[in-house]
Image (cartoon, rainbow, N blue to C red; front, side, top):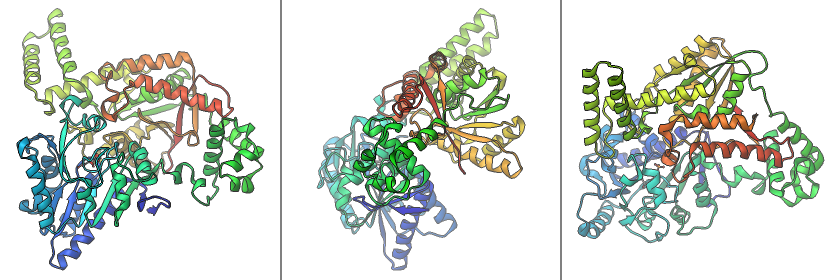
Length: 618
Ligand code: F6R
């Protein structure tokens, strides 16, 4: 399912999921290639790297393998490459393209062009001119695939790049380097420069597909599509291109006026959700409590239709006041003693996102289980693995435990770490130690919320076990494992991270695995409530919240203590998500206090803090 968005400066299609968008993109590529193949012509594709086009490449591989899509006449030009960068380096775009796509299809090696990051700096200008010439000699690019960076870059054309820029060496923006830092195991390892096709080069492509997925792209997508083209958002230059289509998932479309304030861009169907969204927006916008909104407030803010259809103002204010009041729930699982199952994608999402509610549920006498879905081992620093090896060695010495084995392991681990290169994947030993660090932290944090170790499950789902940032798709056994847990524990409620924007997609994959398992057990007659919390990065919008759990100052304090137990994650809050330097406990506290403040501004009861949840709707 997709639909065009009105009033954007580039034709834009929004899809339910990024997978559907990727399928659509693959269909466009497939059609073009088949058309050119039957005309005996080559197809020249401009290709991108990054997390965005992965689904497209997966689908093209499937089409090639299962539906006979012949790519032997395809010629490719990649957008960019870090500089300097050896072609076989694990971070090179060259290697990424071969591993992700080229190795699995029949594109001829001689038809593949990727800027070479290993050339000498003095040769760069001539090399870039040659790259441009090769594109021209190939007949120009038929179809260019693009992602968009949070700086608005296409290729690596950072803010300030001109509309006419050509293939060249550029300096990367600090936001871009921070976004890339997870893949490089630290910002300091991310190259400062890159070679990239220019905006002018890209604009010469006959057709362009640009894609963006996830909430973290929503702001830049809005600027690209709704602001006048300018060089602070280079993607906005695509507004002048004749045949560009923007493909979005719902999360990336979330900041567009059509979704934020649809009443400003056209006629609105006043569904109960829309009414709620509009009235809450209005109350916050004019700074008046819901029960104080006047006819004039509605009329002055494009909400005349709403007033006419569902007014008067007083009735609308009252309706939403009652509706929001009903979300406040100090007994999230009711007053009977129940079994509750909380899923935490990484070992710390439970306490970061719903630590207060966990404490409440335990205090209200429910039996709370937490299932940690992945080990989270890639987010542990080497120096922590080192320190714990040291600890165990000293511990075993004090208590006179098996010297020989201990020393062997310690040397094996520390020798590996000593010679480890930036970005090199960890040895199995090191991965095990890193998992253990996070597992023991999770136990300590759960205990701080009153949950004993025998109520914790470490699932170590298969899709995550790659030892690198890149993850596999959900494994069928992952789903059966989760369904098995439902059958064993028989919960009355489960809590799931309903995150749309975690940078590596782990939360999304975990959520999809849970949903599949819920569907499975439902067909067998098992039923329970499914509540979604937001992970570390975003919060539900005030109008989306369906359950708001009051958290008092003492609970916030305990929740913070629980977050502190995740010692290896200190200083890591900014690591995957980019530019937010606040730590997890700060973000979480600000978020909960912020939600309470919004409720207060709406004229609802005043709480110290609130944790917010939404029901899963299949
Ligand atoms: C990649 C490229 C970049 C990315 C952009 C988005 O070849 O040129 O412009 O498309 O940085 O990256 P992801 O998809 O990882 O969010």
